[in-house]
Amino acid sequence: MSTKIRLKRFGTKKRPFYRIVVVDSRAPRDGRSLDEVGLYHPLAGEEEQQVRFDEEKIREWLQKGARPSDTVKKLLNNHNVTIK
Image (cartoon, rainbow, N blue to C red; front, top):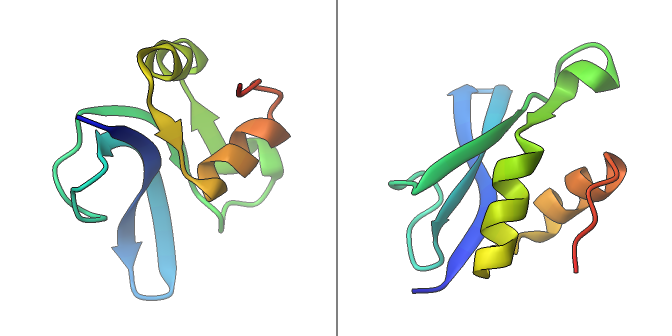
């Protein structure tokens, strides 16, 4: 089973927020997830309030072979989490 770290959309129309989740790569965007590893709230005021994640869980999943989506990769790189 191939796993991905990607965003799962929540919120109302024009007021989105996202959970950073680990899912099976074949699952739909808002389908069942294996683990929740963080939050991304793009409409929050300051940049520190926009992204929260559990760095330890993310490193664990990366070691197991999970691949981050392009958007998640950018978010992690902005917060100095190294991705191989």
